[in-house]
Length: 133
Length: 141
Image (cartoon, rainbow over all chains, first blue to last red; front, side, top):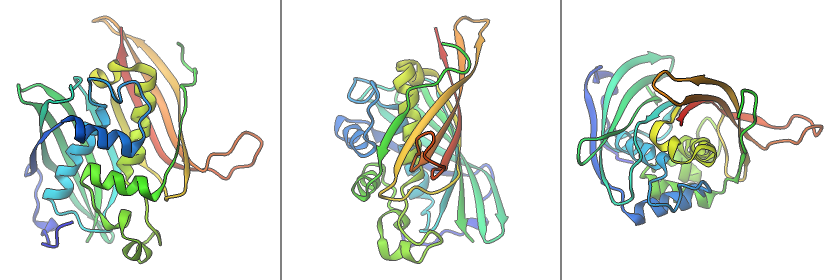
């Protein structure tokens, strides 16, 4: 959490709100797999368990938008388009697609895109969150 | 594999230790997940697990059934319906909704998936609560 406030009302659709580069090394992926206790065959394989990619893309939004405590994650859409190998570097980009006020919350819809170093798109998605207004 | 078939379910006990480990692994340190004092003053009254941590069980279920095809072509659309609290037992289960033959080859398998907290066995009453509803799909050869 970052204490510096963001003026969420001033964010506009089409605005890039996050861009982060992340190395998916064995330590990073192993920590993720252990935390979620992933028992699928992809966990521990040469491939990254795909939800780790999604989690790291959401991390970029959480950190770069300085999401405050009390924010709720309402919905999530994800499309995986290619497998990622452990050791690859990904770039996670996020663009605001919707910003509206609903009651005591500001609803932000953020589009996600994840590419590898050689330009392969491996994931796209959309996060819907409710930030206390 | 046919419409109506059940997928192998995934069960987990959600502990505060796991939630804290997820915060470290994901970089999401929202205090509603890790700060008991902050969470006590929140709408939920106590700490809750990260939504994406619980959503990971949907991906685990699909990867368990479809392996690398899930990583290469999986689609997931979900809603978080209710929070999951440390100490909750959760179960994620799915059913094949339909299978479409694709013109370019292969089949797209669409599934309905739900995650419940405190699952109850048939005949034990209805103590469970839906935490996530999801629709998933994957393309297989």
